[in-house]
Length: 503
Image 1 (cartoon, helix red, strand yellow):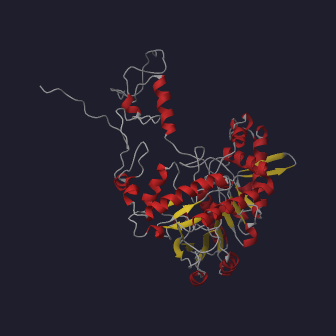
Image 2 (tube, helix red, strand yellow):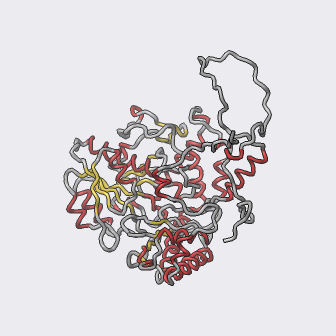
């Protein structure tokens, strides 16, 4: 690999930390000297500099532009992260979210001045109920895990209202998202794992064996984290209900079934919906997100406040339990009224697509995943037999005796300008490679990805392990000691010691 004097590689400019570019006295703005005032700091006035770097405006612009060029996102290229649904976000949604009537309103405004905003929340809620067949929806949860919390809290409230305080266990399949057992534990439940069968689905016999009068709920993802539809789900719902428990469904993979089936018809009592995944909002890196939670008739009375309702005077918020005659709300889960900017984007997406468009989108997502499964199944090793849903799952058996690990394979993909698929997840599959192409990628894009993966798989099997051990070669930074970085993170930059001439 050619080295350069500057550290730059063509148009890929080497970039120092902004603190390392400090030029004392430089600034992008001139401010007048403040007038002298008597402070009330009690002698605690700062004696030294604050530690921020001094840079001119061009330096700042170039620094952040160069950093942005080192990022890989959905607007840069194909992003096949399994379980994350990283798909194109229509710019129309962004334009709608930036309209002054939506972007500039405030939750403290009188309700008469934000009728359009309340109507938008109400309209989105009606769509979510129609798409799931559920009679109620809590709109305030701020993300998927928050929606899980909402669902488990309504289940707990329902049990306590019936005097069934002995229900202390929640059953969670091995293939569940990691937030499921964490949420159950946060609600005070003990968690018991349900194994999968050799088809990658919930072992129904094992589930039945664990049911009892102390079980509060099951938390199940469908399609599950292996990208497979739980085709015994109706029977699962029946045995769970016979035991007096409730059925929580993790809706993270709703993108695979939206418009194709109503989850109410499966016997589900509650399910959160990741609006930022199914209905297209830019996400990743911590946000933004929203996790409205649809509720069955049995759980609807316990939905958290606030709730938007419509009457002869327009739209209004019910924010207090004594004003809510139809239920026994568990309280408030979040300040204000939910993730409004995400609501705008989600409703814009839904209205743009329509019911038929949403059904086509989920169908295309499943078609694309099965195309990857069919085209790669002879060089990679599929984890389970048969077709998949919205994501294709492979494992590392194709790398056996090559000296190449799953991580090595991922690093080599980076050199090809391809973001790696999700690696080592789900945990129930050793050396997992989980690919979710989503519905927004074209056949040409998928064919390019397939060609790269096939070539790398053949190179690994040909014995060129050293090539993979050295990857990535073409990135601004190469391999890190990831174990050390996780255990001993450097979270603060400190200037190097000043060189002093010998006396």
